[in-house]
Image 1 (cartoon, rainbow, N blue to C red):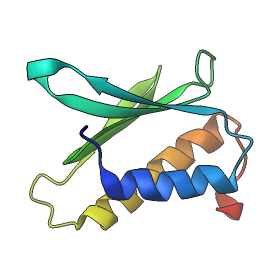
Image 2: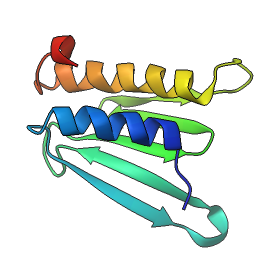
Image 3: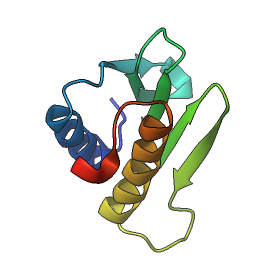
Length: 104
């Protein structure tokens, strides 16, 4: 199943340290179209945030739009890319009222 391993590892650690953030993990296989992993924070609520993980890209968004964090020749390592995506996720979580990033 396709995922962005580095992001999945650091976000799982973050969520473990922030147990008040309700979340779900989904593995989605679309046959020939490929597969992906999705993290849904605040599922089925107005505070829902979805992170879609593929090996080379992470898309994080809510009802207001999304941000695509991908390598695309940037020269970032997978861990640097994951850290950049986590920072964006934390900003969205803070915006939705999940708490402060000060204790991350």
